[in-house]
Image (tube, rainbow, N blue to C red; front, side):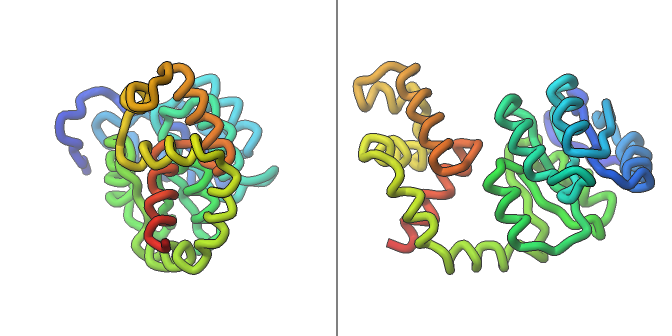
Length: 222
């Protein structure tokens, strides 16, 4: 079984994180049959996941949400703080709305239930590598409903930003690059980069795309 990703010829390195050996071995066997997918490591705990991924710097991490010594979501946050280009795809047996929200806020690019087909997991890997986010259809509707019902939480976070930071956040939502924002505000690229880091930290986000989604969702309620 193969699923091709258009115009993608380079190998995609993958780390599997799951405390169930059978799950890891099953995923490894399935993914190893696919062209361009290379399993470079496996971890069973949050601590092992962080250490292994910071060492191997994989393109993709397939991460279980619940781990013996903590959370895959926390591991995701720690890893992406150092390796922002790595893509994390959460895999879980549990239908947990709060976990999905937390995973998105931690920077995960996708969230899938383990009950889906092997083909869907492979397609999911290619989807997030191409820069697109992915949510299992069974959880998508409920998550966005929850976001819509709690706009006040986002407003509280927004109020932690200064006026300058809010204006930069709006420009990020418009798709402006740091260089373009710097030119518009007559500031250096480095200064804008620092502003963006502060904004993401205050909003408890790890990616510009998440910040853009944050302000877009919030503006939909104003």
